[in-house]
Length: 277
Length: 277
Image 1 (cartoon, helix red, strand yellow):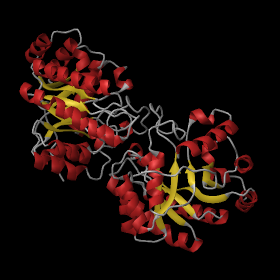
Image 2 (cartoon, helix red, strand yellow; image 1 turned 135 degrees about the vertical axis):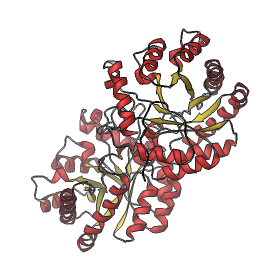
Image 3 (cartoon, chains in turn green, red; image 1 turned 90 degrees about the horizontal axis):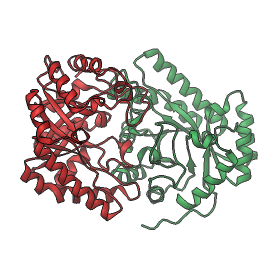
C-alpha cells in the first residue's frame, strides 16, 4: 500500500492540551503563525473566558474549530453522579455549540466499583439522555474508544469494535466514532473496524501521536509521531480509504514535551506531521 | 452465576517472582510451611543452581512444579536474534524437563521496529521451530496473551482471541494457552474465548492478580487479588466451566509488595485467595 505523504498543513489540527502551557490566546497566535489550520479545544481552555470571544479569536486566527474535548464519563455506581454527568454533558454540548465546534468528543467513562458491562449500559443511557440536545445544537457526539489500560476508570469502550457496537445499539446518526491511533494501533481488527465505520458513515475524527518504547507513564508519555511504533501512515490510509478527508489532529499528552519550549515543540510537530503521518 | 469460593490451598500456586526477594530455597521453605501446594518457577531462580537439586528440593517441600516462566520473545527484525531466541527456547524446554515442569509459559515477544503482523509471523515460526523438542521433552508450550499495553516489545498476541487463532494456525496439541486475568479482564470477548479454549482442550494454566486504580507503573504495580476491579471469581467460574481444575497461580509483579516483609505478604496472598478468587 502506498499512501501519499501530507505535503502541507491544510489538514493539521492541534489539541490545546498538546501545548498545555499555552493559554488559548497564546495557542491561537502561535498555531496561526505556524500555519496550523484547525484546533480542538479542551474545556479547561474555556474556563474564565467568554466562549463567544474565544470563537471570534479562533476565527480571526484562521483556525477551524474541529471539536471540543471532552464529554462522557457517564458511568458511576452512584445514581446522583450519573445525573451530574448527564448535566455536565448537556453543558458541554452548549459550550461546543457556542464555540462553533461541530463535534463533542466522548471519553465514555467507567467505574471500577461495578462490572464493565454495567458501565457500558450506563454509557448507552447517558448518550441517549443527551443526544436530542446535541441534535438540536448541531453538535455530533463522537465515541472515542480508549486503550484497554484505561478500562478501570476512563472508558469501558476499549476497541473500535466496541465503539461500532455501541453506535449500532444507539442507532442515532448524531453519534459516531473518533479514531485515535494511540488507543487502537495494536488491534488486529483495526482496519476491518475502520471499514465498518466507513460503511456506516460514522468516522468523525482522526487523532495521532505515537507509542514510545518504553512508555514510562500510563497517561502522560505519548510520543511525537515517528518516535514510536504506530504505523501512522498506514492507519491514515485506512481512514482515508473510507472517505475521511477531515483534519488530522495531533493530541499528545507528554510531561517531557510540556516541559520544553512550546514553540520548538510546535516546529517538531510540523516536521513530524509531514514526515511520519 | 454462583461460583463456590475456594476453601483450602490445595490449588494455590505461587510464582517465584511474586515473592521476588526470596531465593528458591527460601521460597520453597516458606511456601511449604504456608500450605501452598504448587510453584511456578521463573528461570532466574535456577541461575547458579543444579536443576536436579532444585527439583528434589521442591518435591521434598511438597510443591508441585506447575510451570516454568518463561520462554518466547521470538520476534526480531534481526535474523540472528531470532535464531538466538529459538536456541534459548530449546534450552528453556530442557530446563523445564529437568525441573519436572509440564509447561513452559511463552511470552511471545514483539519488535517495535517491524509491523505487529510480522512479529506474529515470527512467533509462529519460532514455536514451530521448537515444538518437536517440547514434545520429545514432554513439555507443553503455553501462549500467554499479554495486555495490549505490552504490544510494543513483549507480545504481539494481546487478546485471547489472538492466542486461540495462533493455536489454530499451529494446530499442534503440544501448544495451548495461558489465561492471565491481568491481561485479559477488560475484553468483552473473554468468556466466549475461554469457551473456545475449552472446546479445543487447550486451556493450560490460570494466573491471578488484580488491576489497581490508579495503576502507577506499566510493569510492576499489579494488585493483590481483591484490591482492584478484576472480576476474579467470575473469570475462575468461566475457566472451571470449561473443565479446568488445575492450579490457581498467583503472579504479582509489585514494587510495593516486594518492598514489604515477604512472609507478611504471603499471609495476605492466602487471605486474598480465599476471599476474592
